[in-house]
Amino acid sequence: MQLEQSDAMLHEDYCLARQPICDVELNLAAYELLYRNSANSTAATVSSPHEATARVFTLAFMDIGIDKLAGKHPVFINMTDEWLLKSDMLPEPAERIVLEVLEDIRPSPEIISALKSLKSRGYKIALDDFILTQDTKAFLPYADIIKLDVMACSKEVLAKRVQILSRFPITLLAEKVETWEEYKQCREMGFTLFQGYFLSKPETMNNHSKSDSGIVLTQLLAMLHMAEPNVGELEQQISRDPQLYYRILRYINSAQYSLPRKIESLRQAIVLLGFDNLRSLVSMMVLAGSNRRGSTLMPIALLRAKMCECLARKYKLSPAENFFTVGLLSMLDAFFNRPLPDILADLPLHPSVESALLSFEGMMGDVLKVVEAYEKADWESVEKSTFDKAILADCYVDAMSWADGVMGIAAG
Image 1 (cartoon, one colour):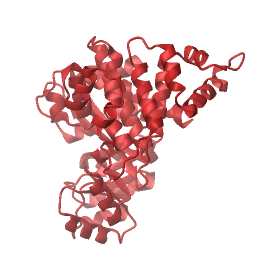
Image 2 (spheres, helix red, strand yellow; image 1 turned 180 degrees about the vertical axis):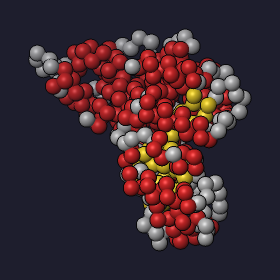
Image 3 (tube, one colour; image 1 turned 90 degrees about the vertical axis):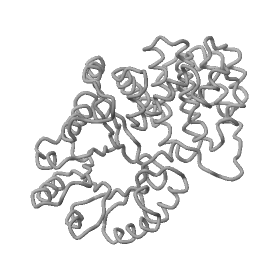
């Protein structure tokens, strides 16, 4: 099945990415699916919006699978008037899908009737880039969510729009939130859902505390991604953090390993776990415990790291493990709310890794740069890169599946 899914992605040469949507508590609430068809094109264009939506549905619900793509979370998908009027073609389950009515769709009697029918079937309706007018107010009885672009107007105008729309029983989503300051302003205005790149940036805070446990873990990750990790050095590093020591022993003594006797020494645990399992376990602990938005950041960071590693293996770049490290460490500033150079100073990294992280230098820097562009759906930058678009799509899907699998283990 995996081969069939990958072949579909490679054959059609699609670009499909997902962007997280979080709630007020910064928990992951949903994903928006972002699409471009990059085949034989030099710009981020599609032959028709209707075709683009059709391909998103095909990829999400047939080739990849909605559970693999979004786990338990709902997905937002852009709709055209054609798709709204042909609602019998929409996939199930309806409760997993939020249909985004784009700003250029007019509330004709046919469209309003279609929305009423879709609501009755269980689909949620979101109004994208919505501006309330005498004409568009006809949408409001059928809307569950209204998305407002925070970059499209001044803060004063945005606040006024929120004030007016708050009178209706509709969830307000702020999109294109670029900074933490914007997030805080939108939260104070009354938004309860948020979408944008602010999540993957460090939050400006005073008196950053330096977590000794976090540094031990990040140093341990760097050691695990060396070409030949040393068991004795790993044991010594883990022993610096009693809580980490305990958690590893507890993990390997869990029922899933069905060991004939309890493991008592850390060295035994490391050998039995193996470097790959230990690397995944430490990755989870690094990201999950770092800050209050770890549950939303963790899938992004793991996906980024695994996609970097996948591209390295596809292009026979060695050692591929270093590319994983670059992808993972590239988000530590967001996790620990500290400048990345300060964090890297605590890690025994090779200069080539540091230069890739700080200035996108070298092949690792090139890979990191295109992976970041892909995850942001910056299709113009993806098109300009030298990387094969089909390979990028294939690696994205594989990395997404792996990252969500790791998240599932962490949640369990």
